[in-house]
Length: 256
Image 1 (cartoon, rainbow, N blue to C red):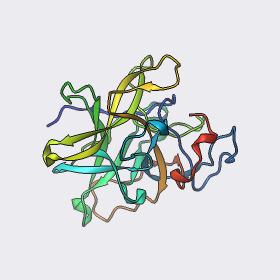
Image 2 (cartoon, one colour; image 1 turned 90 degrees about the vertical axis):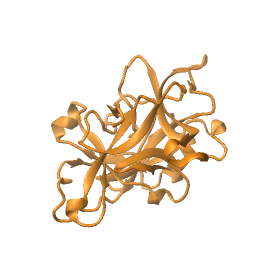
Image 3 (cartoon, rainbow, N blue to C red; image 1 turned 120 degrees about the horizontal axis):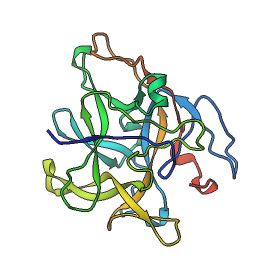
């Protein structure tokens, strides 16, 4: 079993945003924040923080997708294709859990009838070897996780990030790489997390060579009900801020 740490989500933004679908909180005007909505379910969309530094082929606008690597084990990748085909996540926990950063970000695993379903948690794994590309993001079967959340309403954007050390700059990155399960012939756009620094201007996050800094932005999605007999529930799924269409937002109007 891979040693792992749980993915955390911060209330202090360096990596992301959000909005779009039911409860409007702001107008889509320059100087404001994008129009936001509320949803129980959401997909995560890759938003390159500096489009001039995107990879080739580009990863901006891709969904966070899953590459199967074993029973109930998935590596997070930036998936080409329709964003609406990405996995649907939900933030799980009580209101108190949300206040004290104890919620988890989950997806529904398994298929078929209720008893075959199980929750999968968004997590990061630290033993990536010494490739300097940070901790890999995974979606693995297991418990609800703790400390994971999207930002509160007091923040201008809803975004995913990791709380590890408030004094350290952190960023999600996408790096081309291989997955042992598939051999060396196939290259994936791997989603990792790194503790990084900023350049001399303080504007750009310095990330590993060959990688690009990204935000993981929630796009509103319908959270389907679990079938009868499922061993867990959606009773504690928390409504989050998200966008109806992340790619339709002109991010150049808003400060990141």
